[in-house]
Amino acid sequence: MLRKFAKYYRPHLRLFIFDMCCAFLSAACNMFYPMITRRMINTYVPHRELEAIVFWCAALLVIYFSKALMVYAIQFFGHVMGVRIQLDIRRDAFSHLQRLPFSYFDKTQTGGIMSRIINDTFEIAELAHHGPEDLFLSVVLLSGSFVLLCTMNFTLTLIIFAFIPVLFWFAYRQRQNLSRASMSSRARIGEVNADLQNSIAGVRVAKAFETSEHERERFHEGNMYYAEARGQQYKAMAEFFSGTGFILDVLIVVTLAAGGMFAYHGRISAGDFTAYLLFVGLFTDPIKRLINFVEQLQNGMTGFVRIQELMAETPETDAEDAADLENVRGDISFEDVSFSYDGGENVFSGINVHISPGETVALVGPSGGGKTTMCHLLPRFYEPRSGRITIDGRDIREYTLYSLRTSIGIVQQDTYLFAGTIRDNIAYGDFEASDERILEAAGRANIEDFINSLPDGLDTGVGERGVMLSGGQKQRIAIARVFLKNPRILILDEATSALDNVTETAIQEALEKLANGRTTLVVAHRLSTVRNADRIIVLTERGVEEQGSQDELLALGGIYAKLWSANAGDRR
Image (cartoon, rainbow, N blue to C red; front, side, top):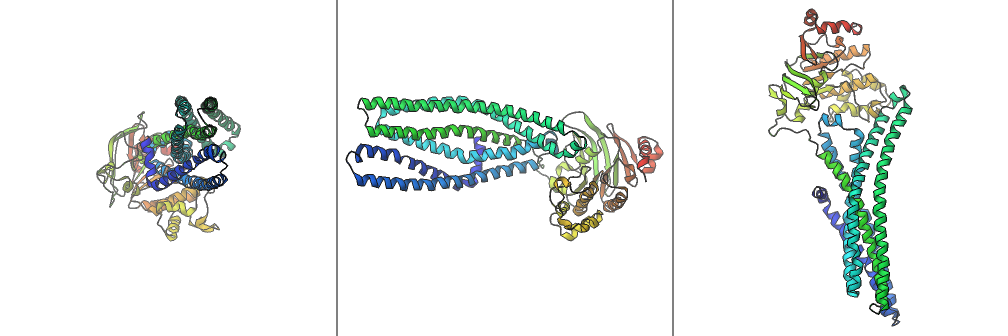
């Protein structure tokens, strides 16, 4: 794990070395004061050497000014390095997140993911900066103090330093408690974030059903679990810091008692005794730094472990010899395809469907029959449990994901708009498109007049998830994306479900023009929107029950005929 963490220093190695050099010089500056004090008490003051006293006081001022410059560099450049490492880790985590399959997001809360990428990476940045710096400073100060103290009185030095192993033994024992408490606390933070995100996203539903009190109670319950976890963490921290603080205080008492006895028996001078006391005060600082380092290490590595758990999730990958899907004809085959979510019961099994190039095929049937799932298999949002799917005679797993998905246009039932402008959202179909092409796509989706009526036109903000627009407007923007993308294969999953009757008719005509010459899969519950499809497939949990044209299925008098009869109110 440490090796994985260390690799993030490589791009910033020069900055890291500079920070460590400044830390070394800052630590070296701290070593002068006890030694100068010792010399003054033992030599300069008894011999009344005024010039030497003035000189070394001035020298000490210069040393402390240099130390201030070093501290400034450590604080500024060290934090810059930490933030850059944080950005690198966030970049890698988000990039990996974008390559994870739908199944990961099906089972993972959004708040938990946000906690890892935002909160955990902040703790990692603190460790990246302060961790090596505190560890290096502590080693320099402790080793330097040990050497200098040994030159003054070796026996007294051994007595004092004998307490340091006890201190580190205690810190090591407490580290395990801190680790468990920290992991539990992080998990609770993720759960609270998920509840908060969920409550905010659903605030309109809560208001509509007057369930605000229920939401408050639910959030309060999660908050209390979080407080309990934090309480356990603070308890472990309290034990850690109180214990180490007590050992440090005992160390000072031992130094005073032992040094006093040595001075009483004439085995140490007053100047050396004073220098000893100053050095003990000096190297308690690096010990405290080491104690803080344990906490930083725990928090930072806990965060890094959680990030690595995310990075360990298996991403979507191309086959080694994957080829680009080019010159798409749109010949699609589902060959004995079965699918289930996470190894559960099959959503459907044994699907055998062939769709000819340019054919428009509608998928209809009761809810839960797998219509949308079948469409999601085509761009490999999910992988089939068995069987295979081909495009133009080749298994889709043999194509690169990028070329496969750029060849398929999707208008989904749940329209999602990103926070930004109307232009930004339509341009998702082609980021290089000009305003003229964007407006042309908007016109074909029957939303250009609405855009032109707005004061800011294409620059109009849509709000979070498109909250500033109506359902029909959001759906038409999503349709405009596909017009702009201009793919060879279309998937229309309830593409007109949010439109009024008049607009739906206009959009349906536009979609039929777009589908002309392209292979199109249409999912619909409103059967009036698919009656002109070349072929209609009735899909249930048992698989393909019926298929044929509208007239053929009605004449058959089976499932489709019953659905058509039940949907009589939707036909206009």
